[in-house]
Image 1 (cartoon, rainbow, N blue to C red):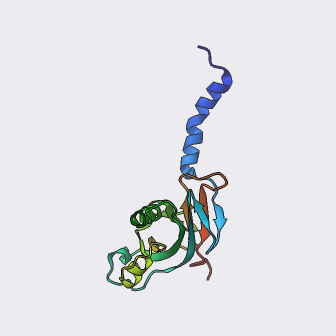
Image 2: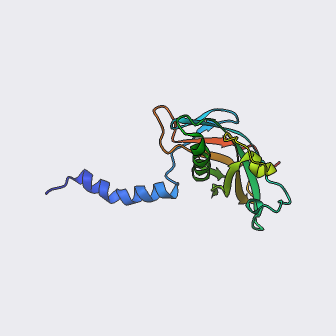
Image 3: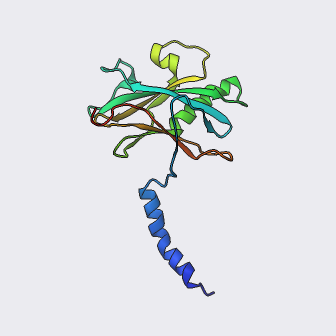
Length: 176
C-alpha cells in the first residue's frame, strides 16, 4: 500500500503537535465570565458569586491547613439549576463536579485543583441545612500567587456552550 507524501509529513509531525498541545495544556481558550454571570455546563447552570482569601491564621479545620509556601483561597459557587436530579443526587453531583471540574490558575500559569468543595453553611459555620445551591470551594495556592483566575471545565458542552469558562477572581493583584 502506497502512502502519499502528505500522509508521511502528517504522521511525522503528529508527535510534535501532540507534545506542543500537552505542553500548552491542550486546553481551548476559555470564554470569560464575571461574578454572578450564569455559566451553563451541559444541562446545568451555576454562578461564581465571589472569592476571598481563606482565614489567616487558619482555623483548626483540616481543609484550611496549608504548607508553609501556600495560602488558602475560597471560591463561592451558586447552583441555579440542577434540573433532572433527585434531591439526594444534587449534593453528590455538585460536590463531585466542583472538585473535578474547577481549577485555579495564577499569573505564572500554576494550576491548582480544589482541596474540597462543601456546602457553604457547613464549611463556614459548621451548620447543616438542606441548601444544595450554595457552595464553598477551597484551594491551596502558592503564597506568592497573584491574579488568580478560576477555570470551569464543561466536559460535555451542549450546542453553543464553551468547553471552558474563566472568571477573574479579583484577588492579589500584582503591584497592589
